[in-house]
Image (cartoon, rainbow, N blue to C red):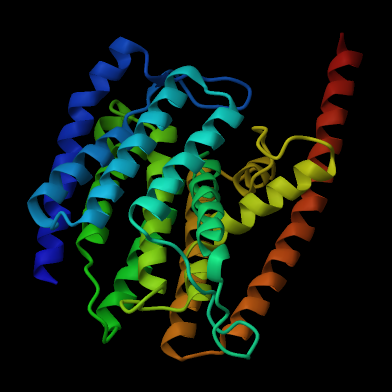
Length: 358
């Protein structure tokens, strides 16, 4: 426990120093997020949160984590992920090109580290559902899904950071309570580095003077790291949880992403098209402040993580938990369809009022 706290403190310090170093460079070279109709914030905000978290992770890894073949592949994968994310932050890459890059990076994890999801647990009561030869393909899809799920949630101050903290803490708690040996050093590193990012991102440092955003580099790094940890912790001899438990640990990003993509397809839009149709946009539409929205969604995420943790510790039937998750998704999706209609009607009325006024 003491060693994990020390690792987190060192990662926090490294991330803090990186933010202070990278921020003025980002302003100089134009690595900033500019306000637009889809991005309603004040002023140009440096996109260095992800770079700082990555640099802190790499530095701390050299100090604390043994570099076996698997971890070397992880570092290479995250390096490419951060590179693609940074290029996207700079040049707003085509969604298709970004997706291809994500699949290639996912291939490094699956085929380079030989790390993939081999089974889905006992979901239907007939024993472990083995994926067989479909395992690597399923993992490729899972990796890209997790990357984009967290990337799509990066729309409010502190949101992706808080959601990832919930997931890291949930995995860490399970590891500490498990009889199976599981290395939590990477969890400690990310917790420390992300807390430093949140310190700046939430605008509390010197009245928001040093505000930063995570950027695509950061949100995709977080998504890749979480699916890596989920795969390691739910598969093989060192598994500490059932695969369905891992789904509950990332429930909010997962449910929101699939709902958004299904709704976009239903109206004839590309599922990868950016829009204001995520859960935080609905809260904004109803007049909630950004800080309250982050708090509400983070609390919901923590509740679902706790439910997953409880189900694992109490050995609740995996099929029940899977069925409950499907019911939750269906309820969420139904509510969001209704909210989409309300937002569309409101937008139409506003446009009509504007035209009548002029």
